Length: 78
Image (cartoon, rainbow, N blue to C red; front, top):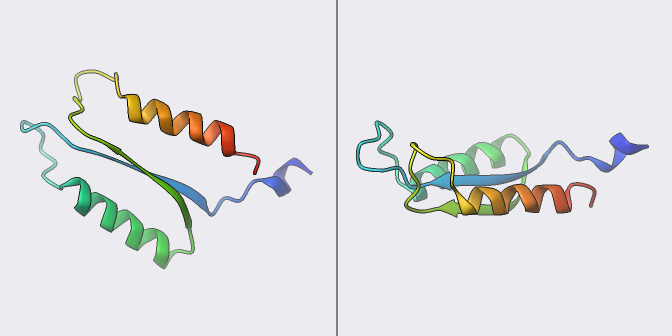
């Protein structure tokens, strides 16, 4: 059955470095630590971490985000 192949507890992490004007002041390391802590405490398996540096909220031209989506689509059934 198709639903048997999906594990809802598998996850990936996407963190990005916000520009200086952003209201979010958390570093990528702080973002990753918080997400990892949440995932561990709630039984999630982190498969991979994606880190996007120098990204702007003004555009969605984010290569690492695109890489993450390819990873998810390629590994979704494994």
